[in-house]
Amino acid sequence: MKSNSFHLGAQEIFERVGFGPLVDDLARMHLASPADLQDMLLEQPGQMDKDYCLIRAAWQGGAALGVKIASIFPANVSHDLPAIHAAYILFDGVNGVPVRSIDGNALTYLKTAADSALGSKLLARPDSRRLLMVGAGAMAPYLIEAHCTVHPQIEEIRLWNRSVGRRDALIDALKNERHVEAADDLAEAVAWADLVCCATMTSEPLIRGEWLKPGVHLDLVGAFRKDMREADDETMRRAQIFVDSRKTTIGEIGELVIPMEAGVICEEDVLGDLYDLCSDAKGRQSPQDITLFKNGGGGHLDLMTARHIESRCASE
Image (cartoon, rainbow, N blue to C red):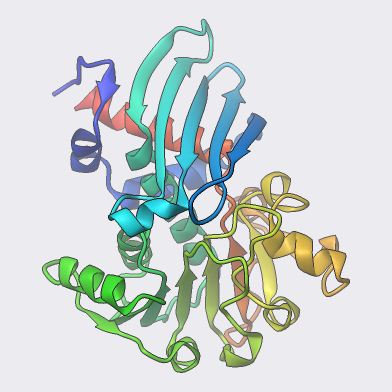
């Protein structure tokens, strides 16, 4: 049934959008020319850390344009609220008429998780069976589901989080959908995993390169500022590095900025992005390679996801 509402709420979106078709659509859209992008970041002192307002605009000429406004309030986690809230408006790319208002949180969860899942689909070993989720925030359930969708052979899932209470609460919330076990020792859990997904608000690295076993795929989601990173220098030295978009990660996110400024890696060490990988550029070279994917989540991905949501909700 076709939706007649200008606004699409989260419930309707999640009922109609699945990760399998979304990941496939993102891969297809990466074959087109990149969208024009513009970001603006505002910040204010917060209770625990700085609070942010992020405005992202993307314009795919002749197809669509969209704007997302997101608030990032780190202290929300202590009040059982998501740290991020967002709103999105999709416009027609030919005449500029507003097409749809989309729940920004739902879009962000789907976009971010599908971005990482596409990266792992293209880079992780096809026989990956052990998934470690680092971080128990609002993104974690979606990342677990997206990775498991593109890797249906995953048999074991572990979850590590600084707060044991939040970790156990998420495991309990997921018990009817996925069997997830608690991880107490991060080093041991990283060494155990075939696929490590890290989505935290840390500024100091959590993942150490010495823990990574040959063949593992590392999906880094959390860092979005120039002073944030989730993996240490040794990780960057050992890994084959890929990003979702060179334009929105190189020089923009601490995961790359900090080790580049220290001379640990250089720009040439970023071997490709999703535009390259979806156009048949080589990714993983060997089953023993350690691959690293930095999920930067730019406005082009918001727009791609919004277009997919609109197509699904307008046609049913």
